[in-house]
Image (tube, rainbow, N blue to C red; front, side, top):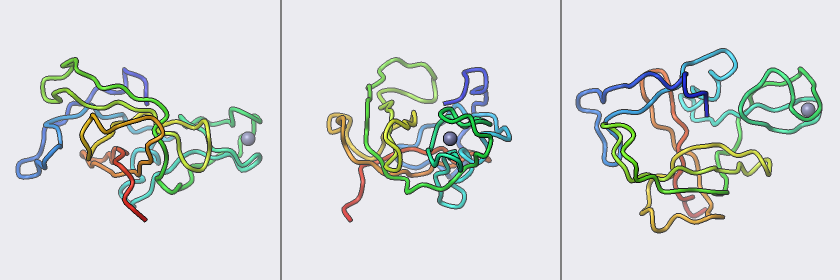
Length: 157
Ligand SMILES: [Zn+2]
């Protein structure tokens, strides 16, 4: 997730666009050159994670240099959008008036790279059913020019 100071925009729900389970508002990240692909890939149905072309490893958050081999040959790349829940908690604290608790905050490990974990929310199932190791898939929730990558239980394949 981005730095807290980047999560500064509260976006009201556009009239007629409220959907079940969708909060009335969310904190949105600022789009920067380095993070834009991650936050907007959902427009094309893609979860885009930075990958190093030298060593082949994915990493997150996006950075201009590979955290493992220090190569500058890095770029965002679409991944499957599937992963597993590595850790989670159910938040009960009402931090935002228009984003009422409870909700699940989780670290989702992407299928392509063990150890690469994305902070996100788990939606689409009762909180009591969320567990570590649960397989999930990405679903995008659009707010203005941001497509937030959220995760839900993986559909049967
Ligand atoms: Zn590398």
